[in-house]
Image 1 (cartoon, helix red, strand yellow):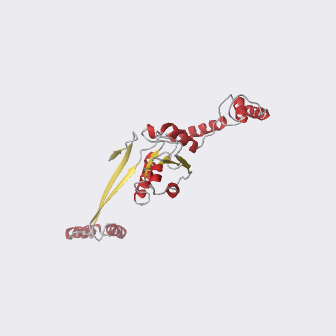
Image 2: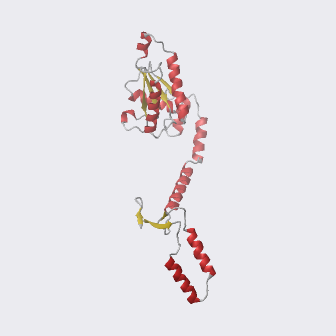
Image 3: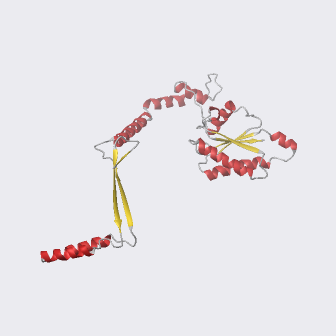
Length: 275
């Protein structure tokens, strides 16, 4: 029989064999024993090797209980000289070599750097930036150089996209952890610090209501919004059994892979909002 493979146009060859075992497998009936004796008399000789072979063959098919054995063997379709995998590897290696050649430092780059460091750092062009960056822009085609970290990217995005953001009451923290245990520890460490500064008075509760703490985790499941949301859900479940935090905080998320565009931040962010 044949089995069609969904992701390939070729067929796999599948063979199915069946055999049975029995406690009395190969045992002849009285009629068969009589016929064998007559055959030996007619032949006039006995093949001892053949009898031993038949005996061992029958013993190999005998089992304590009647049984049926089904054997399924599947063979992939033959590859008649296909080099798709090799071609893909060769293309990847060629692309890597081209990228390495592109990233090489040329003599022209060295000359630009020499000219750059020979410039006067005190020369001003009206820019509010450091003179070093002004000179760097002049040497490399007036391209603006901006140093951005995951924390600054998160701060800029939240400022522009979160309508509930308040620069006077919101706080940002950052962790480079990749492991779930460390992520739990960091989130609850932030909660503990915020809780330690909060009194139970009505004035303090009103003062903290609506405050947000943005926990930036750029290296924690950055390509899986579902896993990140599950992590935030488990944080919420833990908070529900903590008497000093239950009904006081709400946990939400921003993530690069979110389906909703309004919550699609450049880095994963856990948002802790005080109720």
